[in-house]
Picture 1: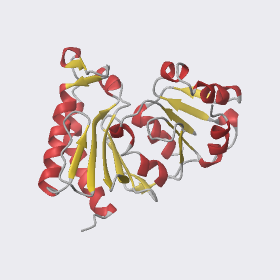
Picture 2: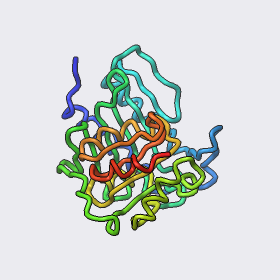
Picture 3: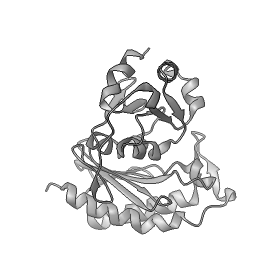
Length: 250
């Protein structure tokens, strides 16, 4: 049985809203630890993912579940849910409101629907299906490119970009006059898809970081450029910038 975007929207909106408030009281640094990959995790990450997993099991018991903090649940289904309980854990840990809860659904490993919940930014809810992008139920679109002088370029970690083999893309955009800011993680894509930013560059992504975002980015009319042929290193940008970015590839 197929699962419609409307059904996904209702489920994801409720599931993420139910856990959103748990992020508002903040977190003690003593509750955080480093994982094997040196990324930060908190007790809230585990709690949110567990609660969303339970909701998925109740409503879609035959579906697979892939989350950042717990092992893959394989039910040999064509459908797989992807959870990033806190995208932007460093921001969350330091009381910076630019983090979100990601929940997406793939069909036969192709991202089908995706959502972002931004608990500390009016609790906004973003969802997309690759043809439409909605913020709190209202359709939004990426902006039209006007000039490099008015171009806002974002990334999560500028040092990661500088040390990467793709630094010439960022440097090339700066040389053309673009403005750079580090309003990153899922908030950067929120700005791109709502028409506030022109480009978001993200490196070393895990599936949970990007799969829920792909239908949102495409639904807003933005383009995704795979820097190495995978979704691990990408530039998401307004359509008019795609050729420029590709011309700067190493």
